[in-house]
Image 1 (cartoon, helix red, strand yellow):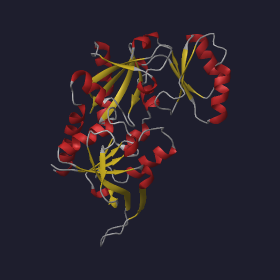
Image 2 (cartoon, rainbow, N blue to C red):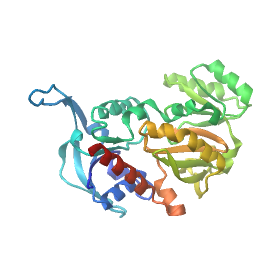
Image 3 (cartoon, rainbow, N blue to C red):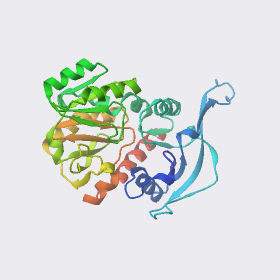
Image 4 (tube, rainbow, N blue to C red):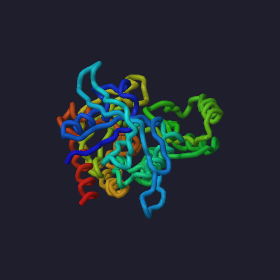
Length: 327
């Protein structure tokens, strides 16, 4: 089956071909004979479609897109064809792969893509992505999490620190470790940090108990259609509380523990039911800290450590679901 695949992502010029998961998905799709188009969110347009005889008006989602081919060659990793106005309701698959932050622009894009899904298979399901920002979806599994507080209330945050001592403060809709702070129990900067955040943002903060196990690594586990299929461990750099690789985290090969599998067994059916095909969860020690559904990463890192091609597994699921739609 050759599929028409539109990839909604960041500019092709900006991606790092040695680590970008979307690039790996595109390489695999191309090798399987699927046709690729690239566009950015800013190229989307939603309008009323021309009705067929006897049919009501229907919304039409289009994008100024360009056919694209990809290759693993630095400085020459893509080639565009001529731009065209692509009707996304007529393609087989849309990969929603633009990077967060999960802001109103991101949310608006999910509303627009909802007009074509599931007739066009959008991966991940835009309705579920909108309803499941990573730092909130995890709160539906409170027994799997470390002690956590989501609030605007400064007094509640102070009380949480008094109870749990060292805490981690995160912007609720942040990404990539940006704005994440480790605040020790005796750190005098908590009030200043809260003042600074709430002076510039109306969004609440997520506060979690600091888990010293993070010094041994923050495990990223990839689930495909609810099934755990690979993992890497991300070890923070010396003097750094964050394990994200773009701030110096070191990836390591790691196996799943019985606790990891228990966590995956609990959340996997929920992810599958919600159409969240490609998901990356974060586990520190025995605790689930985030469920990443917007634009998960880790495919190339897993492949380097254990040779597992998770992009192939993702396309297996997409192709099966598309075939079931057409049957």
